[in-house]
Length: 91
Image (cartoon, rainbow, N blue to C red; front, top):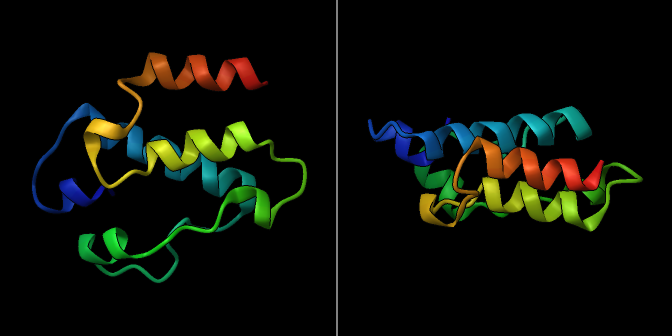
């Protein structure tokens, strides 16, 4: 769940956050923030790059996931199409 969703603010940017978290877990088998308890924890925790946990993940995938999990919704991909386009270029 995105930090802003925990505050009751629901938007498509929260869905992008969830896509990033899902992709991270699919690639690594781990949660991007395994010890989180709240939105505050997500903001102050630094995520380990997927490529540091699983071999063969290109830096572009790291960058996409990092942008999708940005705590500032305005800095995430604009929507699912942009997320899919960026992912599609890499696969």
